[in-house]
Image 1 (cartoon, rainbow, N blue to C red):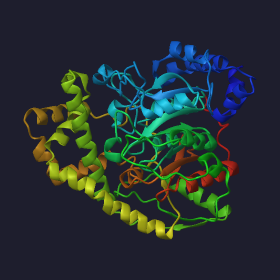
Image 2 (cartoon, helix red, strand yellow; image 1 turned 90 degrees about the vertical axis):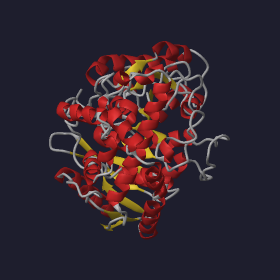
Image 3 (spheres, helix red, strand yellow; image 1 turned 90 degrees about the horizontal axis):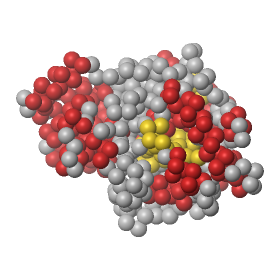
Image 4 (cartoon, rainbow, N blue to C red; image 1 turned 180 degrees about the vertical axis):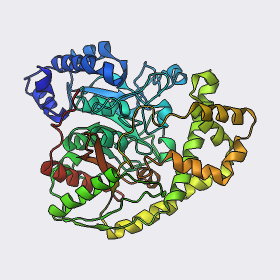
Length: 492
């Protein structure tokens, strides 16, 4: 099989070819590896090749809905037994799990052939993928720009045609942001639907979940079936699943939906004209398809939600750094930004963290009130087009000042001033829309469509109610049929 033939199929299509014995798993793996070797020098999407393991697997007996399809997993939380889960950090490379994570086990049970792990920012802490240890991942649509984060390596690999679908996870937008940057489809499932075991009960106090980035809606729907095939007996939730498969639900024509939309940043920061145009264009398409679309605000206190989100983020970072230090990591094994976030997390009083988690109930009920009127919320996914590599790098003088503040023990005082809220809002200014779904545990998706005048992708986000994955998937299929995007290929 040639690459141009391989690129015409999504993962579902490739699996059908293997099932009909029109192509072998080994042939597909050879094409995927050859494509990676041809383009990844410019993208830096894959940080840990696993070719020998993959060739052994491709040569054996494979079964499952995706038997023989090449696949990449994210080098964060998606543990592969016996290999380091680096998490974009020097400190993480000491972490060699003894067991597959539940998501990886289910992907392997589905017959996928994992041949590498993808680039991520250190511990998934940023909306860009520029770790010091592995270097920046780049956007196939323009390699001077970011593919987003934290699943940026997976987004770049799928957009570049290395694989049709790849593993990601989403704790604040980390599937949806790369999808928006790379002209892909990205769904964040609702809280508790996808098991996180065995090393975790849930990721990041329930903020994060595993999923995929894909070129087609049907691949994401079928992958959601794989990830939710059964519950985890040791997990914290027994999530309700529809009796009908997500793959079947995605194929159904959606009913006439009532959709509220906004282009205003929930934290009051600027939103670029291109992000506004992306939503306005989607409003026109939805109206053409017969849906009722009108301006509406979700009624959530966006600034309070952002502060609560970052409070949990800081506390989680402090816990991660402390755990790795106990395992032998040194300060020089971490990026300065990570150490600063961890220092803030340590300085925060426990009641402040507890209240931030408790206030998720306030945000969730406000969004639930919105969903009593509207089936879905439509927003930009990003506040601006994918930024240039290095644009969000913390300036050296700021890093030096932060290090001095840590040495002097003043971080705690800074975290209790009003200035700290401004720091929080500045950190989220390019991606202020995505944390809502994580804090409330609702499903959300980024759908491709808009392109800037210079060709950069810019997706839009839909947020659904609890259990609304079926509505999101069926609408996405309708949008995909009206404006197909899967065959558009970046100019690598």
